[in-house]
Amino acid sequence: MKEQKAILLLLATSFIWGFSFVAQSVSSESIGPFTFNSIRMLIGSLTLLPVVIPVFRRHRGDRVYMKKALIGGILCGICLAAASIVQQIGISMSGAGKGGFITSLYIVIVPFLSLALGQRIRKAVWLSAAIAIVGMYLLSIGEGFSISKGDLYLIACAFLFAIHIMIIDRVGKDLEGIELSFLQFLSAGIIASVGFLFEGTKASAVASAWLPILYAGIFSCGIAYTLQVIGQKYVRPSRAVFALSLESVWAAIGGAMILSERLSAKELAGCALVFAAVLIAEIEPQKSST
Image: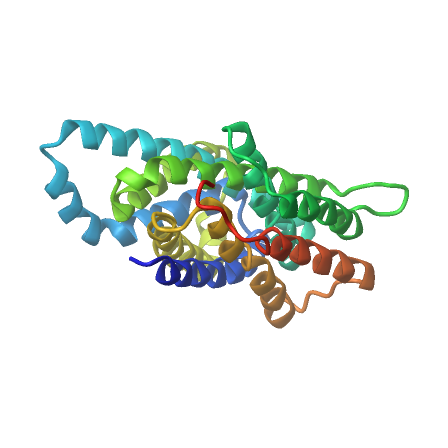
């Protein structure tokens, strides 16, 4: 697959993820973050089951490959579960639109993680990081230099999603996308179910949130995360995060259209700066060595 086509897959992923923020915000009114993510991740794995079985059969005799797939899927699942749960908590406090823009900071974080792995950081990334910090200040810091608890959760989830992207880049190149996606959902769903048992969510509450759960499970997990895994096989992380970060724009649009969320002029300026930081991180031409 050519990189241009792979980027289109990542752009489709960003669209689905953006409106998933709305689903997460709506469901947070009736069910807890562990319950929501446990159910949606397991639905995501079930969605892929019909297409992943032939893939497993094709590799069943290759123990080395299956071990690598299992380890990669579990690692991705652990990170995905942690990021999704923390994000859900943050969205329940800060809203879908704001949550989308703060989460998009992973585009600035990924290159710095790459630096820790021995890669050079381009000048454009340093500039984008400085702009993102200013944008975050306008978006999240209130009077008296205070930052809301929900915003802190969203910043933490941005770091976790950045790690998730780096892990996929490391393990996904040698694995089938559908297989890795299935294993990460199954792992994440099982991990989240541990907290689900302690939330004491009633069946009636789950039933009331069936539509956002199905959207998040089938589209956000089963389809979008699979598109991410496949797309990232052909796109470098520093370019992939640019396409994926457009979820922040779709989240803001979805929050305004469906939830009637409104941001203040100060918060809108912060959103604009965060998005500008996302764009600047990709302006400078990429070198073949990165």
